[in-house]
Length: 239
Image 1 (cartoon, rainbow, N blue to C red):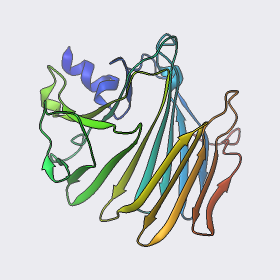
Image 2: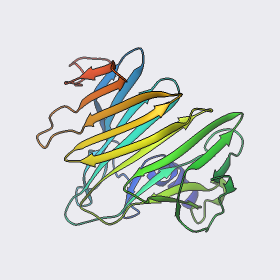
Image 3: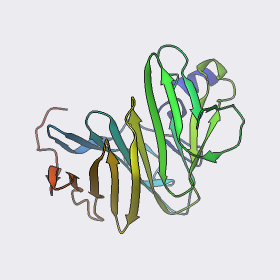
């Protein structure tokens, strides 16, 4: 039924839909990974989980700048024609109901889509979501018809395109990134910001057309926090 379709389907999880359609197979991999004292990185490839008629690439890059910043880069490509993509996040999926606001105002189911930082507070924890790319991307607060018991969730709809790179910055606790500047061009994501007065830069080269490894450089001023030209997980590595 509807509840089962929501709970077990893609729409009930923190993932991406294509034209409202989700994954059709339990397939995927984590081919790239790196860790250091200051930065963790992983890339999941969920492309094989979707219909090949809808999507040819879904790479989710996670760059965790410890302890309070997470950059999510979703590299999405349609298969045969331009598509819209729906980015989902479920703030109520565990524990008590969260308070979900935009610039301090509570989000309302059915309210308008609008750009701006979304704040989520739950159980004494706080997170802010900043949708950086495509420009002027906004979230709306929705429920799945017939599955209202699972409570509302955030949905971000991209413009129709053959390819799109969705960039989301998550700030945890009281950490706030200031002077945020982002450039996405030619398969490179270049983010700079200030955190507690310190300058940071994340330079991520996406997976190449022939599957070449992404490249990642993270710096704090002149200090290199992580610099890897090859992020491939070694053969035989656990997991």
